[in-house]
Image (cartoon, rainbow, N blue to C red; front, side, top):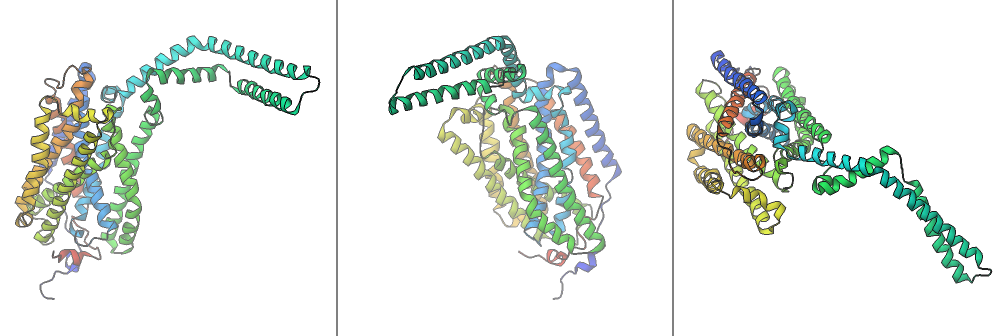
Length: 501
């Protein structure tokens, strides 16, 4: 067919050379801002709580974009998608920044900055409850041992008395003997049970600590298997290793195919992406539970992971549209990417705009309708003061209705600059969404419910966001220049180059 593009004409790929001045500026802003922020946290301890929320907000926002890039990479490979081949490398580059973002999250995990215990109140509350329980256990241990000895002595005496009664009867009837046999067996079992109890100092202490810990904070005690520092740190390593490994493996196979053109890398990526998806979903779901839902450990939602996933999928696609448009403006990918690709990306943005709204409303509707105190507190907090107006204006109208109406127009999805403007709008709404999730917890948590908003803390929010944004921009520019901007020897490149929808 005349006019069709041939993938062999693009087998050498196209390489991006980032402006050195731009990379340096991003590194200067990001590195300098990060150092300033963390030094301030170290030497301005009374503000550590406010700053912790700011850093969490910035890191989670940019991490969500990289995780979204990994999702689209997995989806394209698992579904054997052909249309998106020319933009898949951008997805892979975005996903490859996951370890950088998770490393930027280390100040939240390490105790030296004072962020962790201010953000996640269950850490200090757990320690306080355990301290109280240990003190009570140490004080009551001697009494507990004496009580145990007394119970054992009484049980043995009762057993001996029952046996004596039986022995005193010369010729008991079968029913009478059966009665005594049952009684003696029960008493014997009680004696053995009391004797089998470990009464070592360590065992007694552990038992009493658990008892008093449950009394001090029953909810934390019930969740002890999940909400404990060791498990929390192990899960952080799990997120780091799993998400990083998946992104690195898929990108490395893709780049190897650029060099030798062997279709085995395509088959490996497709097969393994199907297996990686459950690990991806597990890691992301538990990450947002640990970092966001656990800001209030008494609150829970079964739709939380899907809600955060919808936002990261939508806005990572928006970021891909923006990056793609900027690259084309700089002279790259002009012969590779067509308006058909923009149209498809725009349709995915529309689909996930609807999906995000559906999940957000479903979570709100189910929690509000059930009217369970432990669940509704999340929305009660965000319906207080100006947060109610914020929710309606930015999340209901700004995050859904405006982009939904605009993206319904077919022509918009084929105009790169207009679609990029919609993507920028969505990203701003995503910033406000993550802000709405995290920041309303700051005032009530740090002031024991006396304030809804911490005056002046927005300065920390802006500084943290700019700092992480600078590093994000630097790492993205760096990754874009490490390989061809598109998989230049993928067997399905012809299909992508000539896609029509």
